[in-house]
Length: 245
Image (cartoon, rainbow, N blue to C red; front, side, top):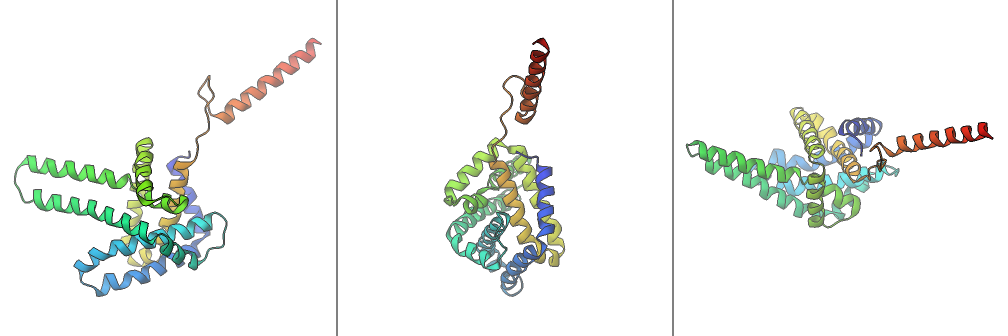
């Protein structure tokens, strides 16, 4: 399993190399967002936007996953992913919307009350729900990469989070920072975000699913280092045997 810094560098390199399809996927998704952002009332937009954004994210994951496997980048692959994973992504959006609603309602209810106890309860509940959301970082990529059911993928994502908590939190913070930075410049968000998310989320998930190299049983060293030492030992033994003969 590679370090998160290496995954960030790999993702940035791949985004640079495939900047045209990344921009194409992103701008296509941005066109779908336009009615929800500029024309519909804000209340209706907030209700329906997750059920549009998550299927589009699934489509971007599908298109970039196929592209990263060596296939030619095609916009049709994004629409195929949206259609193929529509039901799982809508279900995932519904679950995530419930968790976000819990956080909002927590501060709406406890924020209007005076006293340190209510503030502590609000902070604790916000932290708990936020960790649940962080634990779902791998859910949608698992649905796309392995064809898992949405609730199976969510359960497995929690297990991966518990197995690699620091890596998962770091990856989530990186993604959140990218979202905020691109969100400040609306053009940058529209032209880059969806494609960048697809590549980054696929890289992060594929890395955490990769089997770690088996450590040497005696010294706890990486397997390639142990193999090198064993080969050098055999060479020394054969040299000594030849001199003795």
